Length: 117
Length: 117
DNA sequence: CGGATAGTTAAGCATGTTCTTAACTATTAC
DNA sequence: GTAATAGTTAAGAACATGCTTAACTATCCG
Image 1 (cartoon, helix red, strand yellow):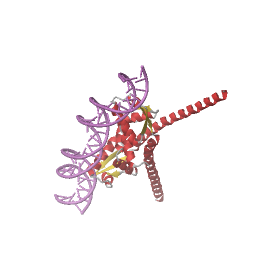
Image 2 (cartoon, chains in turn green, brown, cyan, orange):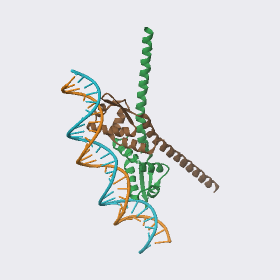
Image 3 (tube, rainbow over the protein chains, first blue to last red):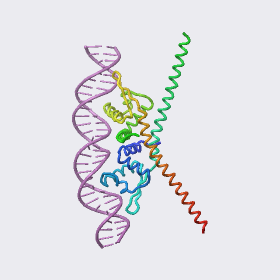
Image 4 (cartoon, chains in turn red, orange, blue, yellow):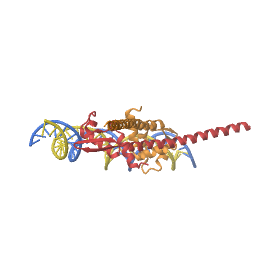
């Protein structure tokens, strides 16, 4: 399971539309810092700061060769975040199943009680 | 698809460990504000503020009857956030498939070329 | 070498977040 | 009706976030 601090950083990173956009584009393939920055309406240092947040969360990694820094997504961290939702949903659905069984059982008891009268 | 501002609010809400804890417990069943607050090491107003963040995101809804406010999770919003990851993963996996096909194709071409010599 | 390209660092400002305490309202129980 | 319970509101302190501009470094190209 993912430890709490990382989930903090991952969800914090994804809470910003600029960073989600960067993640979505990196999902289509690796990009340099300049390529990432091109469609964004902000300064290059601002893009760098977003990239740092993404890297701190583990969602994105980058490597510099020559003067170009290539950025790529880290699917494992994405999947671990996704699995937090899956785990919640599993518990939620199990609870609803139990609730459903309880209600059916209750109804059965009521029918029996009516027949006895 | 979920609109951007809501995703901002949902991920922002989940970026805090206290709020994730509240969501996890509400996933096991509805709770009053006091019940939600009980295990948390902070003042009641602070819990209220976290609850407001969760409600603003749509992840949690609440209803007051008498002097008790009962809070429940909104699974649909959870699922829509989860689906953001699923969508990213789908695109990512499709890309890797294409990349795999390309590499296999390339290898096949190389083998043919070798045979011709 | 010298200029263009790609990225980086630092400082500062405006705004947002997370908590606190104090004071308050509405509901229920005796 | 009085007191306990459950929640609410407001104000403020402390820190975090998301930008900016200015100045800088490292690499590549001719």
